[in-house]
Image (cartoon, rainbow, N blue to C red; front, side, top):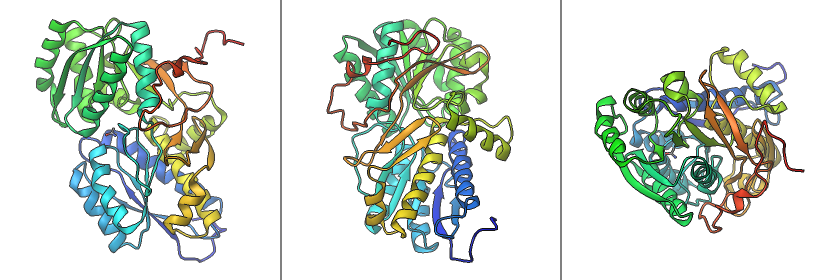
Amino acid sequence: MSRDIQSGKPWRLGVLFSQTGTTAVIERTQLRATLLAIEEVNEAGGVDGREIEPVVYDPGSVMERYGELAERLFTEDDVEVIIGCYTSSSRKEVLPVVERRNALFFYPTLYEGFEYSPNVIYGGAAPNQNSVPLARYLMENFGERFCFVGSDYIYPRESNRVMRNIVRQAGGEVVGEFYTELDAGADDFQPILAEIERLRPDVIFSTVVGDATVRFYQSYLAYAGDGTSVPIGSLTTSESEVAAMGAEAAAGHITAAPYFQNLETEANRAFLKRFRARYGDDTVVTSCGEASYFQVHMFANALRMAGSTDTDRLRDVLRGSEFEAPQGRVKIDPDNNHTYLHSRIARVDRTGQYVVERELPRAIKPDPYLVVPALNDWSVDITHPGRRRRS
Ligand code: ACM
């Protein structure tokens, strides 16, 4: 505990990330980044001399548990603000709980869009910030025949609906769409891989999540080879799943995200240094972890200005607020509570590292309802790291 902290009652922040179960592989990175940000705030003196105290529960990747534990945080733990959730199904469990109490919920995960709650601050990418640029990149580089493979729940189904529209608008086609259980094993992917072989798509769009991602990519390697010729493009495969599946299974595959671990920004270098000092040199950071980190800092900054955890006051301060995040500067859009985020596309190399192949030099305004047909918008100002930038 910091020496500077006065003996005030701490500000409590409920933290709901799974440390066990099928999505723990990614949610653990969100938990670590959340706790690191809280420690940083506290070491710098807390907020108005009061520490932020995390109240952490493990929902065990069981969807209903997120809602039950959110309820417990409000009724038994004296919490008014929470951060948590990876899957959209878990967010949908927490949503009515926070709305009923007019509490505040930070959600640091990419999702399918088409949602707005005055009680949620959305810190992950909406489809115009990740699906659109990924579709464009895949079509330019690999072809127009897409095959979708996803875990069977709301995010993959909705995300595929959005992706299908984007691909069709650009003149491409979806030749197959397959779903598996959240805890799918290697055997579950065999019939899908056989169908993919028969359909001969140019590219796979994967919305498989959690541990099943590891089994999907490993099965793909065994069945079809690595990602050199027909890559898997995904928004839900990150440094964490890549570390778990190994470099051979990950090589050649592609992810679109606001943040990658090896970004060369000053804020990222400082973030990684502290992250590794806290959790060890081998611990990976992910885009969803980075979103958790900057959302906690934005919460602390807003708390400092609002002087209260009252949702209406906090929300007023949060809307329009900015933060120098590891990915670059981010801003909460006062129009929709989502976040202006950077957009990058990276491909895994033979050593299992993401190499950024495209990025935009500015953060993209979130458009969760895809009001603007953004496929062409995104083509403006694309930069290609490693190549000369346009002047
Ligand atoms: C997700 O379910 N929003 C990844």
